[in-house]
Image (cartoon, rainbow, N blue to C red; front, top):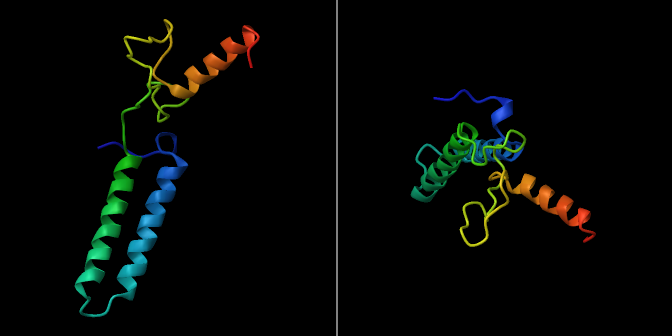
Length: 110
């Protein structure tokens, strides 16, 4: 199990977890002694959403391998045999896009 720290979770992941837990709490506190089946289903769905969000917080593997954007988007051209990335470029879409823009500016494109 991976300890969740502020460095390996995103703000969006944290907000999703908080939202799911608040929803589950609201549903749980509004239940009667004998909840209707649809109310129980809503609670189960909210708790599953919270569990999924909590699991996302603890994801230990970095999708991009990038120290600056470890949980960023992976460049769709990474591994493309028909249109390979230049040597030395990694999987991080954000870094690769920055490299593309810098290269275009050097060539005088906008």
